[in-house]
Length: 331
Image 1 (tube, helix red, strand yellow):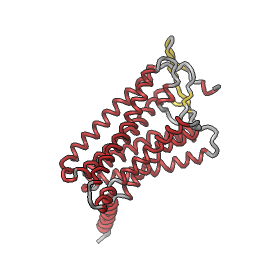
Image 2: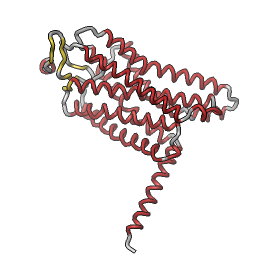
Image 3: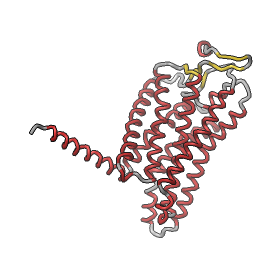
């Protein structure tokens, strides 16, 4: 690899730990800087949209409900996940700073994977909320309470944090005596642990465990939820009532499709054909960034409550500005 292998390892007899990793990322893509500028705009809009949604939910007391606690959690995970990934990605490839310190690499890996997994499981809790609302409408307010949702959200944060801290921590027991070139756009778990020279069977097991818990279980649970919802709706006599109930699920279904379909599609394409590494990397980078941009737009534009709350906040700010300007005028 020439200069790409220059990271001097710290070693103890047979154990090698590199000072840096080298992110190979995007290679031989024409006009790739346009893509990075696009990602920069995506990040700016993601921050604006999610901060707006978080602020509206926090400031408007009528939105202090279990449903919007879940939306708040998703917006927070989107904001933190994008911040963990995009600024570093732009710094690495736009300014050609492809070497990343070993410790920084593990930190980046943990935060990107952690917030992606929180996004995934928050969609499961959203599905649970829709399931109770449609299948047990009369008991909804006694089942889906603020303490119950807070406990669920706390459990997923603590469990996922523990699991991913253990998964990433296992990298520390690996010896990197060969290449330090990570074939990805960030310090992804698979491309990093595959570089190790010693036994990585435990890392392999944890990689599959994390993949199953972060992607497979949420998809299965969401699918089962919607099967139950479909059965419940089939028992409703009126087609109008069915349509009305389905409309309450559209935002959630769009979020699920945006997050999961590209990941599933990429993995199927990789297993069934020779997917070009650049195609995989671009698709993966969009999968990590676009849902965080679209989630607040979907919830702001498709939810009347949020739109009305934004209007009320704007009206309140306008009135307070008029009042303060009148007070400042000399008598």
